[in-house]
Image (tube, rainbow, N blue to C red; front, top):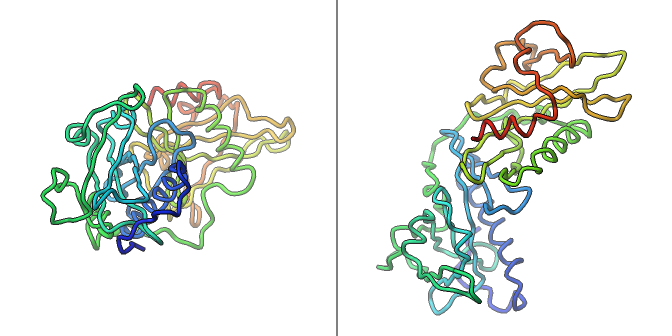
Length: 327
């Protein structure tokens, strides 16, 4: 819900900008999801490495990096912001600024590419650190230098390239999620842990988890993004192969989306030293259709020839494999 423009003076203790900033961010993510009717899918970072969110535009598969800058009060009739210069040095990022008011967002928001933000903002210093300062009016009819990037808060989706009435294929609600239970979470956590060792890789999780990619990985230098769908199967001495299943209804192959399949060795309490990694667009080369899903067999350590052979890798190479894709 958008507010009436009254600010939140007095509600936040002095210096508690982190809390009010978090409120602004979550209201922004909710607004983008609601206004786009799910056409914009929000992924949030697992660690703070410079980007507040990646917004996935489902109509064309684009991933839009976003920095959110919120304020809880006006300065006169303007929103005033001071931001560290290092937080807006990525030209691929959209800067979204706004006011939080009781129960929602202020009536007008600023959505501006980082390059234009730096070009128009005042450059100064705060205790020796380079910063940018801006002031913009909460008035769409203003002749401010920021006027081209002002937008009504209830039409934010338009600045993210979403047209009213555009729809994407629905996901069947009655089907189970991609990874369920402790086993699936264990595999996802292992992938996240291994990738976290690379300082230049920034990982994001979706809210909600409603598409093929459940982990996004963005390289901080190349700014490339890939999505990972992690599958975890259980292997034992009595059952040396397992079935990997992918729900048809929510399977959307894309050039930037990959599957990672891990095998948990139940009797040893560890993952097998071999894993699978393949492009989502290659799934149907070896998977068969069974009811509501596509499925295939994974037999770790097998030397048999087959379509999966070229996708087998040592688990210790997981990070390097992802880095190569993002180079």
